Image 1 (tube, rainbow, N blue to C red):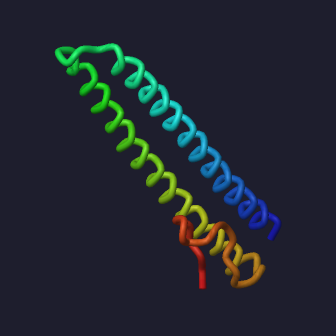
Image 2: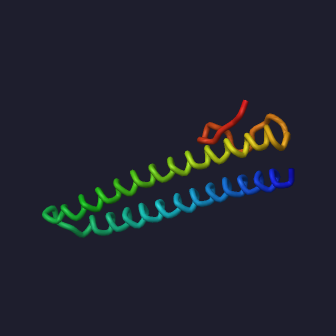
Image 3: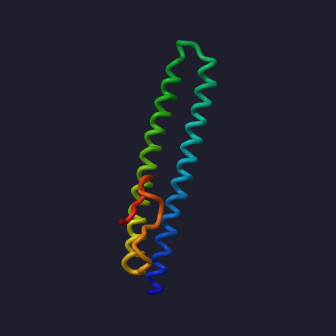
Length: 114
């Protein structure tokens, strides 16, 4: 039984680490988008109409970063959903702590057992 409790604790800790990594990824992508936005604004004020090509390339890079950001957040959501399914199964079946799910509500991508 103590092995199952240890395993349960490891899964909860692992799910919390994924949440932390997702937050760190959000901070990184927010920083990248902020830097590119400031650079676009500063560069856009000093260019002539003939030099708009670098501005369009920068905007394309920014859109690519946004797409990568969305993909990364979605991947973290799927990973955490699977981890919380395991945590809830361990809690319900093996540890006998009740039928209630742990973790945030499913409205933000986590799993709730009923």
